[in-house]
Image (cartoon, rainbow, N blue to C red; front, side, top):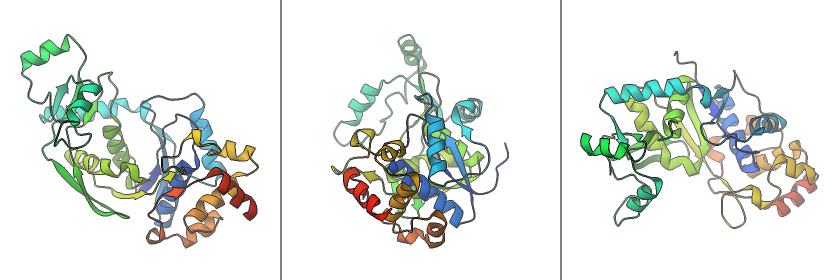
Length: 305
């Protein structure tokens, strides 16, 4: 499949409505792409649970805050053959092995003293063929990457040089579904995406994804992991925090233009999208999380509208 010209992207999972934190990341991804002359693409990462109507709602809300995108929307659920072909290539190179561990077993092993947080410790890496055959009778196997490094370094536009552990990440789950880490690496390359702007909760995933991309012979991407929106307790923003989606905020009397202005204001930018693009500079992005308090920010937005 040919690699297209340079692009940035926003890639939500269609599991529900986008909240203001998601919309903030989408606006930042759009600003990064448009300010550097890149195309801006949308991709639906729908390999996991999908809620009926969520994709349409997300597209409606992205349009409502003024975002546009280039080319057709890609859906990961329609690209399984691409992912399986890549796994087969890694298998032929001797870089894949079967893993029979449950999530609980992985978590328990990772909680052992001196274990890297959340890392897979290679429990099934050295099983004999006889041991694998016996375990296949009990449960289906996932397929893991046989990583040949322990850590990898990427460069992030906001965080600089960043090094993190690389473990034997899952390529194919035991239910037959390709993993997120594999799919996102392949999709970014095949869509010509060389600029990945996303929440900084995913920063620790970047080195392992970049390493996987290098094994697949894919061009490297540039990263910009942007601060999240948090609630007043310092936790990731969620539906339970109240008026956090466009529909919630509309019911409280704020239209999409006012919400966009509130989000852009949190970035020190004017509320008009074109004016924000003209003023945008990655160097001016606040590096601390945006604390979104629906009651306070509703009052502020109303006073400014």
